[in-house]
Length: 228
Image 1 (cartoon, one colour):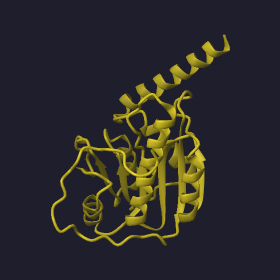
Image 2 (cartoon, rainbow, N blue to C red):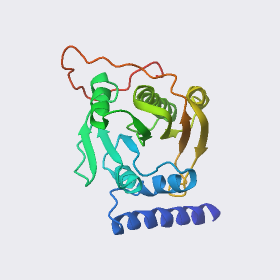
Image 3 (tube, rainbow, N blue to C red):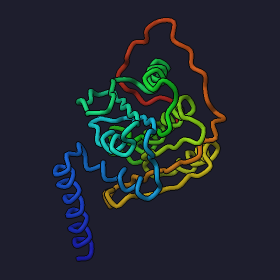
């Protein structure tokens, strides 16, 4: 009976955020996750330059634009097309390619104050594989930080919990003064996702990018690296 009650409460809460997103013209209920994270950790300030990785459909871009107004700059990148958002630049690109990093830097005219990542792999239904793919995506987000994040910058990213989580945390603690794990109220109770809130980027791992000699072919997304 308790399980049924807990499930009913969770479904009602999810329905609440879904309806609220529609009412407030947010593109995703996930917008409220970022709102709650910002209210607790103070991620944004007016004038910040923000990059949103895996930004489609654009709910996080909307929140970032509102909270960095009036002089902020928000750029969303995704392999999928993002419908235009007022006050936000978006483009299609693969974050694993230097050409995408270069385009981000050129669009900013410099580097980012905040990197956001709500990226998630296509769920295969096999927990260990889904977790490994989530960690891979997180390491891509870390790589973006090493390339375009300003010293003292911030990173907010989603990750699925699992046995590789501690290794990810070790990598983050090498780069940031503060690394905290948080689950906002807007997250589903049944989800294994958490958000890692990183602040105070040391800026010791910045990578200098070189423009590619030839135009890179834009591939379909595949999970790369040594995690799976």
